[in-house]
Image (cartoon, helix red, strand yellow):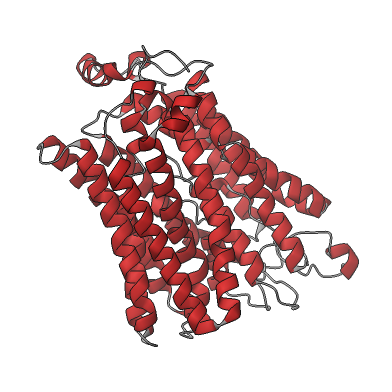
Length: 488
């Protein structure tokens, strides 16, 4: 799975020289503030912009969007916004816009992204995952190329472009699940999907390093041009080299084709126009995944959006001056995904545990341990090093859910995996909206007590989601998901 986040738009910088304030207010720019022109700020912005890919989440882009919203709320200063200075030859434009305008521009992506989650899953099941995923990423790559022009035309054009980007990218991960259901044998599913998710994390880490260099040497518009161009080239390779299923692949060996097709034959074909919506709504295993995903995403998004504020305001720890520590969650999460996938398939292949037990085990590890670390943070005191270690461990171990609830959609309903991922991902987006808002409300009342309560609420939600999933989760195909079952 490509790092969809890298195809996102790069918003322009602030305070364009020679522009009147009322004119520049109609343009949009990224979230560097206070006149800092260091490459650290470039990496900081892209980190927030790329949070979707971080940890290989199911709702990768949703994470990014929510994090961007959180950044818009944090940048409520009256100073003009600045990006790092471009070299004179680049003549990169610089814009100025208020915190309120930032929030509108950044949240516009989210609204588009949330609208096409379930639709993308439905269309990929109906039309195929290859054309839906490829078209979504191609459109988002082309739109990314247009970001500098949209910013030049005005903030309303940039808002519209961001919304279109969200609509285009919302179909990508549901379509990915539709393809995995056709290609990944049950005993290889965990490691294949988790290696792909790790690619998202490592791709983001690489993008963080590259974007600052591009901005400093070529100017910020070239981030859009280069990332969008790479996305377009990748899409060309996608349409030429990827096939919908093993049966239609011209170069796969007959032995491998027979191996995959025989192991997945019991799943049936992808769904048609009608969906068993009533049966889905009554399915406790599906509700178990949905609730667990909501609770896990609450904690995950709270860590990404609120922990930098906690460490800066409470611990007075500047992550931007500690680049190695800032990168550890990316490296740890990517490696954690790979390890979880390999270990899960090992347990299944050796028949140590059944599918349901493996999914619940890795969900428990990925949900319970980060919650424990989070509860411990308020009692550490001002030892910022220990807090960084705990938070890094939390964001690393939460990747274990990649071999648990994140894959369970395909276990219980492979024919509808893309559509179900779209549904649960939508719930994850809602968690991403509510979590930072709730933290802000709690902290605004009392700093110390507010943070402690925020940690406890997140941990309690995770514990509740885990208990519900362990009680009602399943590892077998549900009756309503079988091909011979009448649509309700």
